Amino acid sequence: MEPNEDTKQHINNGKGGWLSSFLVLGTSMGLGIASGAWVCNLIVFLISIFNVKNIAAAQISNIISGFVSLFPFVTAVLADSAFGAFSVTLVSSIVSLLGVFMFTLIVTIKSLRPPPCPLHSTCVPPTTFQNSFLYITLILASLGLGGSRFLLGTMGADQLDNPKHQARFFNWFVFVIYFSWIIGYTLLIYIQTSVSWALSFFIALAANMIAVALFLPGSRIYRKIPPQGSPFTSIARVFVAAFKNKKMVDDDCYLHENQHSKLSSYEKPSKNLGFLNRAALIKQGDNETRDTIKKSWSQCTVEEVEDLKKLIKIMPLWSSSIFLSVAVGIIMSFTVLMALVMDRSVTSYYKIPPATFVVVTFVLTAITSSMLDRYILPTYKKLTGRHLSFLTCIGVGHACNILAVISFALIERRRHKLIEAYHLTDQQNAVAPLSALWLIIPLVITGIGEGFSFSPEVALYYQEFPKSLRSTSTSMISLHIAAGFYISSAFINLVGRTTSWLPNDINHGRVDKACWVLAIVITVNFAYFLVCARLYKYNNPDSTSDNSKTMSN
Image: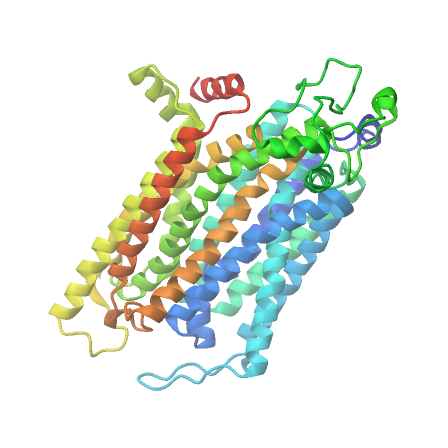
């Protein structure tokens, strides 16, 4: 929902500017580093510190990742409709600080965690109190991270007036996100595996404290946009009004935002989803007093009806992207589990931590995203004379995911054969004589796919969603990421319950077969995406063409 004139006067009062944006970037960096200490190595933390079984640890990790991705959508709605971005971000950063502090207590106070597993012996499970403390810690840390991550980007851009400056800020914001996570997946994981868990969380705690310390002083200079009310209310009103007016006669007399103005984009509602058009019908007897008709739960405007239709039309495309996140979530989990039973030695003195392999995906995503509009799209245009559409780029992401999962299946099959050939199945979690560097291949493919699909998907939603929902459109990405992580957890649980492919010691299972099943599922989903893309008609085809040209010039 765009601010009205009174709101613009209220927020353009000399506040904002690059200083405010840099404070937001510093806050984002601090919170990103703080979260990296627990998010990036959560599976290993659960296995080595809390004696959680391997597959269970992967499932918990996926559930937490899904929660972290789901909560930005919730906080975006809360910020827009009730509390404002500053208040929600401040509370979230403090909650994150509390969560990281509790993680620090876990790794420093022995009574808060079970004793370490002795070699070749049964591990002692955590007590009820220890489990409760862990889950409260995970919830608080997840709330803090999810509640601040995307709002900081919106708030930083709000400080600037020039669209070019806003675009430049977003470039820095994306860089900060990736850079902070790369620190988590390299430096902090190295400290956790080679020095101590306690030191890594003390660093995270300090980073979170610095983030809060940077954010609070900016309170006096931040440009704070007041909450404008939730645009989802108008969506609900269209459904209610259409139901209430279901018996009304359609006389082609509809309510517009401005009855006497020609600024409206619609003379009358479109014919598709025609049952919704009744929400905008003017009741008989009100024709003489159109100017006094107000929007209510029984009366909406044509513009509101068409906005809802836009949203309904794009949802199949959005749903097809859920399995992009499902594949990525399972790939991330299987990467750590497979790396634990592969040769991670780089030299005779150093082994790559299992979770660090995932950083390859982040690096390739960042590289591909930065090259997409500068090199890849212009080169494609020179070779073919055509522009790559948003949907084509998203399709490349789908195809890369399929290739990545197939690569994982082939690598795991080779690893499993080596375990059998060297008679290592009797040894618990035996390491196969196969370099874990082979995992880089599917991770590179995954990163390239993410780089191709992520920014075009954001641009597609921003362009095709109703204007009243543009501030929320980008959070739809986090929503399908959340759904993807939860479905990936359900997939692992289903395969584990119905087959013997995913035991605690994967040397006794067949992870490769699980990967083949996943490859079949996401291939079917790719076909579903192709159908949706084929049938989809852009709301603004001219704008889409212009955007594609801009990306490739």
